[in-house]
Figure 1: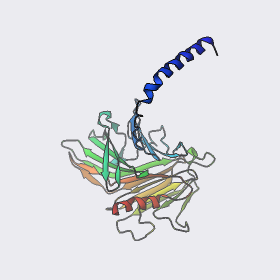
Figure 2: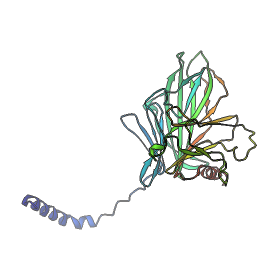
Figure 3: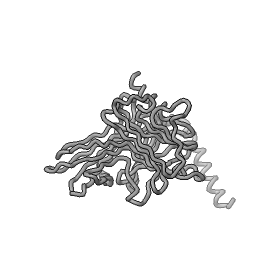
Length: 319
């Protein structure tokens, strides 16, 4: 050790010895427990909303990547391509046949608040953004995301669209919720991008309703009506997984109209999933459309897990 360093340590040791009696008389400061739900926004416009398992990252146009925290690592099977023709946010509208998807977030209208509902206590993230239709009508989109302390793997999501025009209505031809592109190579690089197993609704005990996605032309569309009689299919949940992680989307409330759940391999071999309503509606000036509350859920993969977690979550409201 250099002489200067040694003398510095001696001086520090003397100072510590002098102050130890005073330090010993002080009561240790009480540490507040860290909340397992957190929020932060950085200068690049990224917004993080985190639980101990599910973690969400939004950009400044409401595109979102969903992560699973597993074994101290963040895993995600979401793909957000740089090509605007392929990229879509989870929630968007089709207005008179044209997709309206790029809503610019108002950074001054981002907030997090404490909530207490039938599902327990948690936090709610509110995002507000605006976009213009091809005909120049301004549309406001408010996105609400709920995380609950007792359910670290699930996020509840609601979108509200408001016509800010004073004189002109808009014709909505399709409502899309929970659109995601999935890429298996993000967690298992030796398999094709589309190599997943999926199930819509309640898994059969023998796995007979599992979908093995193993071809580039795979495409299925499930249509769930409010009077669906098939007990396996009647649950509005779509669970997709590989050996490393799983992700599910679904509707939380009882169906009031037909819900369409498409799952297909896209031209670039990514797997696309979503919840859609093709029931058209007209939004008058100043009028708002609130989408049914949907959910995003993550799990460890290897087998279907979303239905059981979804059922447990719903059962909490009956206790």
